[in-house]
Image 1 (cartoon, helix red, strand yellow):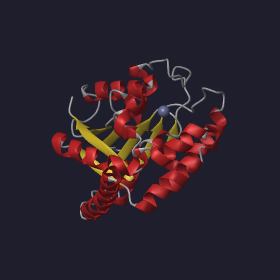
Image 2: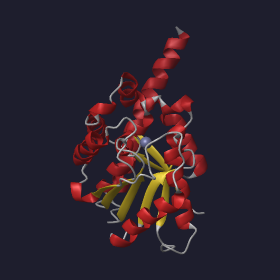
Image 3: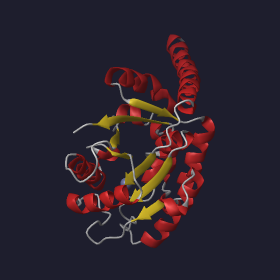
Length: 252
Ligand SMILES: [Zn+2]
């Protein structure tokens, strides 16, 4: 009985915390319109909504101009053409127009979890976007790449090299999405106390989606129907990345 009471208290506290934090960050977001030009760099179609949905919601809510650079067509199962269309449809729901999406098809950037991509090659693609679209913020994976996928980690390594070079302006802010432990990754909204604690200790930025935005991100994920195996359906229901992103500024 005591355990049930504790569990119900925890669930109620998480829901209340979500409402308070969402209200706080929404006000913060509305009053901090910065009209940035943001480039989100991902490795595969579906990364944008599996991992970066709350970040995209946050920046679009700030009236920022967002672009997506997806470094492969996700051709691991020879479904690249299908997945490119799915990506366009997913982004359409998230609020990114087709003209704001670049999908790279390069034989040296094959979708493969066992392959590390050439960082110099990625650097060139990112640099081109930064210069062509006057980008002032880049958002991407951290060193672990959320799921440990080597392609994700390669994207971070390439952008780290780019940041430390003199090939882009030092003023361009690099934001990396924090990888979460398996313990909290699949607790959905109930990971909030852990996320908030981490936010306070590490001073990371926290982007929280509204219930409406969460549903929109989930709808975007459903556009990737070729990827909707049972475990991805579970992911949509349980992953904290569908609801919130912890992001920190990468210095060097
Ligand atoms: Zn991926």
